[in-house]
Length: 151
Image 1 (cartoon, rainbow, N blue to C red):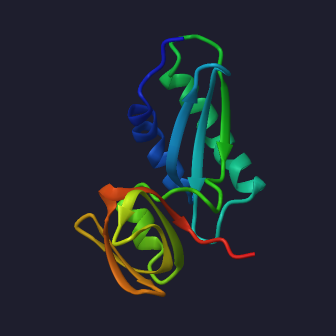
Image 2: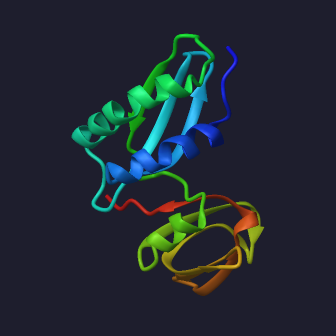
Image 3: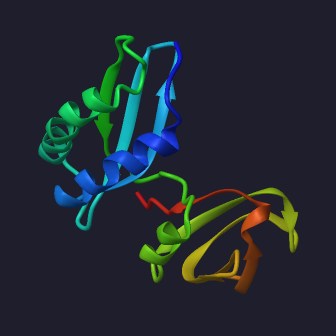
């Protein structure tokens, strides 16, 4: 199935997202299932009603954009989930002061895993207040950074 690039779809739908009070934080094609999933977020979180309202708002405009060049596909709208990896600077900035976990590709300062309070994100570096003290970790060394979920 031939599809339009995710970047084009997100750019097209972002004004609609803003009007409905959400932000598109990620999007993905699943070619096997012939589906497009839009991950949305907003201050206070996303519930089923939010997903449904956004789905209804973008359904018609997506038909006009025709992201699959006439082929049938399924549109899914979803919350990004609590354990969604941080991908953009905005992801980091919105979680300053919160506990995060950092998974690394290779050991850095003796460990491949850190957890602590996110103090800042500047110029591609994470400043983390960890048990071992403050750590400045280059984002390029990170396999995954996400909120720490404590049970």
